[in-house]
Image (cartoon, rainbow, N blue to C red; front, side, top):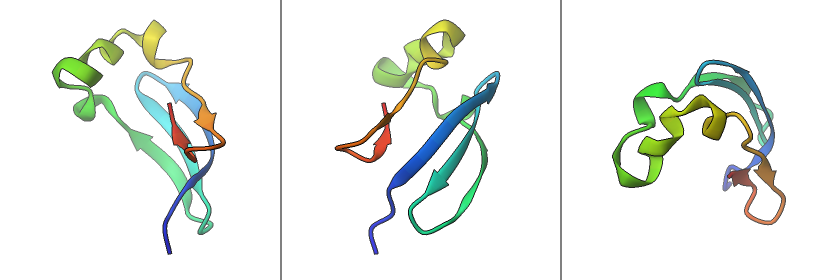
Length: 61
């Protein structure tokens, strides 16, 4: 089974709540993952907060 994101919402700082199509859900802190040229700019919380679940890709963008 390929796991896809079904729902996600911002909680605080770099913590989001996420639910997958296999029913697993919970909180994840992404702060340590925000490194490098692509993800580093998301350390700015104003850029991090407005993520969404892309219905076609079924992941957060």
